[in-house]
Image (cartoon, rainbow, N blue to C red):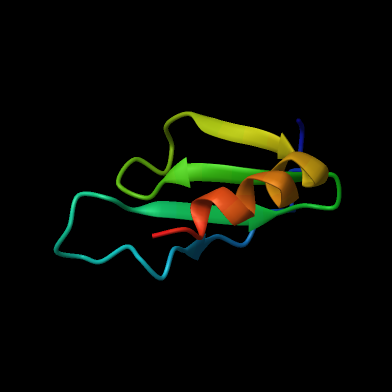
Length: 64
């Protein structure tokens, strides 16, 4: 996926992530995809998911 040089995704940190814990997940929505990254390494690898894949994943992620 390529974003225009002047376009930066807006990242949202998971409400389950804390500054004290090791799990820090951030998500950003683009017109075509959902991006997922580790907030501790923002320049590291990212998952790029289709919106439909993300929507199918959410019910599993929301179970505690």
